[in-house]
Image (cartoon, rainbow, N blue to C red; front, side):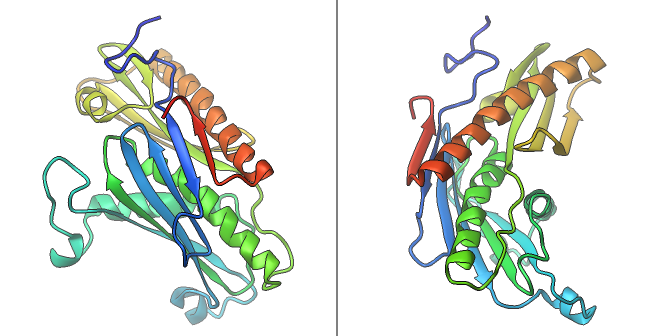
Length: 253
């Protein structure tokens, strides 16, 4: 089997580590490391609906939403904070909407009652796959926040109905590969982001041909790689939740 610059096979994830309860004050928080990408995910509970639901007088229903940001020195050169540039970029808006709708796909919003869970994903080091790492880590943060709601008796029924995890795939020199780092992603002919539930259903498939169109056979191979990678991530999530462990990992990170 063909290997890559870092020694992985084409169907191998980068080493993944999730550290739980990473931020003291948040109801749920993790630090997720996927290779050299690192994201802090926090879930904060607010005991009211978002403004749009209140204005529409929607009753007995909660909401899950997300914000995403990259710290100024998360990349090789310092970037300006978006707050000082006058607003978030189109890329940031697209990613945080992706995170929010991915998480909502596995939440019974009525079980939250009239509450909002804000999930913040802050990239402290970027080496490709920041949005997919954010989704995978944010699920654990959301799980812990919902557990806290149950323990404090603020809700009656646990609202999460399934796991959510995500990974990237790509086509490089005609070869499908799983979980692209930055150097692979920046030279890929095709790059895709896949979000799935733990039960194997698709939430989102984002795919773009950078140089030339790709075939149905290429698509199927990339999708198969993504499914295998996400199944590993779901098993990691489940191990953390079942064992109530503060840290779990895939690979040797």
